[in-house]
Length: 324
Image (cartoon, rainbow, N blue to C red; front, side):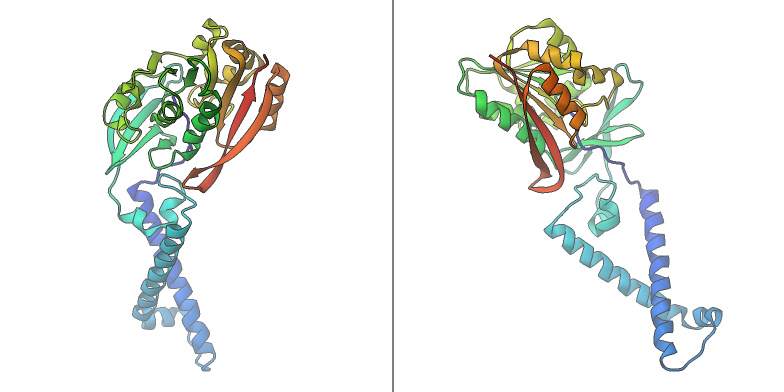
């Protein structure tokens, strides 16, 4: 399962509650402003009588303040968009989010060894994969850092004789699509995906945003735990790309923690060919993980990449090179 930026969903009830809160806040601000003006005209009005007498004026001012608020924030987001669709903050700061179509649930699937469920949803041309009860794990609108995960590695090994790449986590297929783009026709890309339904989704409508990379003849799919693939093969890959969690800690399931331990990193090192590359995607930096990579024998570099169109959160990509 390809990782992503975990964010909490915002349902209709939350939108209504926020709208009521904003209206009440605007009423209070409008009333305060009006009282402030009256004070300078030496008019003394009791609060209770004031609200009864001027409630219509207050509500009109509240509507105007709300209009200015949403217009200003919408303009700001159109220029900078620091919070992409699906973020916990986006409904609070974008009027557009309050009127867009709701998400339609397409399918759900159990997460092996976790007890939880993944949920595939669609809204217009956008797709999201969520952990039920926890929030959005990834979305089709923001995948620049996943693309960069493949680009940073595959550009370095594309010139090798029959390069072979292992990708841990299919997700929405963007990392796979980018790897195929930067590799030649003589390459092979093996994708290990734990959840069979994710493979099925990518063969269907979910595969469209990434260009259906599973249909490429250079792609081999292995349904199962990427850890088993790493343990079973030695000096088999020129590069290994891991994007199964939000970083070097098990998110979708606790068993994934092994991948980021000294034992797991040693297995990755052994599965690489001489001067092979291990790349790990993360939502943020982790100094302890960097130290573990060094202990295993990797030469380590880090790259920071924005999540979408050079905007949004900075994600971290570790590039670790094995020895000869």
